[in-house]
Image 1 (spheres, rainbow, N blue to C red):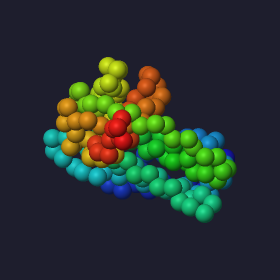
Image 2 (tube, one colour):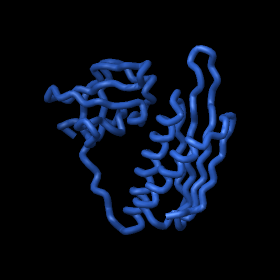
Image 3 (cartoon, helix red, strand yellow):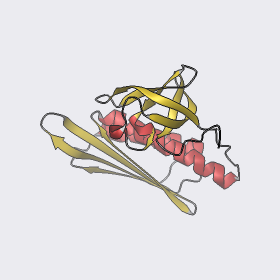
Image 4 (cartoon, rainbow, N blue to C red):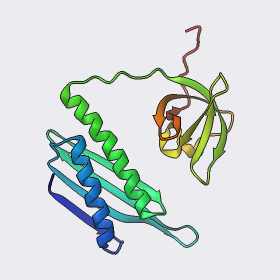
Length: 183
């Protein structure tokens, strides 16, 4: 499907290879929802730090009937990782929008409770242990409240279990509003 696509480079040299990857990702989005009206992708650098190097930002703006879907992903040192992460998030939002348009109601999973047992702050991920001893992986992007940087080992959290490439992982990780068995 050919849809109007605009690719903008900000503080990044224009690259045919990057444009090709973006065009392929946009084409794949069309498989999930065939009524995308336009797409604008902005590729930029959000920070130039002498010790950390370049951090890339990818913003995807999709125009769909009656709405706009916007995804903004940043802090990836590899531009291709930033593109992948942004388009994965755009795909999820587009699928959710398509379900709403079709009138399908998503059944929300029950929240699980656990405790943060390991954090790898530099890499942006950690592990949560459920009461039964099972450990689940979670990523910085899976944290809702507080931000990943504010989580500490031992924090009690609630989360949703979701299937991922290598098994189950924790999503929508947050602290607070825990339902007790007596409630």
